[in-house]
Length: 228
Image (tube, rainbow, N blue to C red; front, side, top):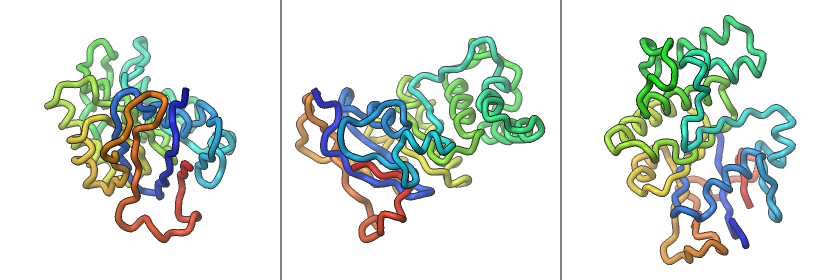
């Protein structure tokens, strides 16, 4: 059984790209491949010109925001955001600065001492998002991070996410099956769209990919992340 088939796209540095597809079509599998957490059985997948596994060994930073916040329950907000910075052995003063800036960006300064059980679903996802951004990753992968939230909270977090991207211009791939969410984030120059009439059986890949404006005619060196 094939989880993915005939997938081709490239992400240029500084783009926030949305990938739309129905549940079970292989979107999360694709993110795992890009993150180097799984190996493709065929084809090529390059991160900054290197195979995904080699890119990880070359210390390229890939942040991952999962469908669940995946916060450590025994750590408060500050300690959860600090975790990846500790693992990267970033100096303590720089850690403190990044944490303060991150909390301010999403309005959680007054909740810094709280533990995950004391936070709402939206607040937990904000912590998860800034935890992934605090190490300043080369690529941020978002796997339907707001899918379990109510519609009002979801829209608010999408607005905050877009604002963070507009201010920082990190490179990101946002996976969703919500067309309205994808259309909203498309104002950030997303250019991956589902094609009509695709076969949704699990043994074929129903994700249709097409390049957006300004992506054709660029040499491979202008592409930072390529899947082929």
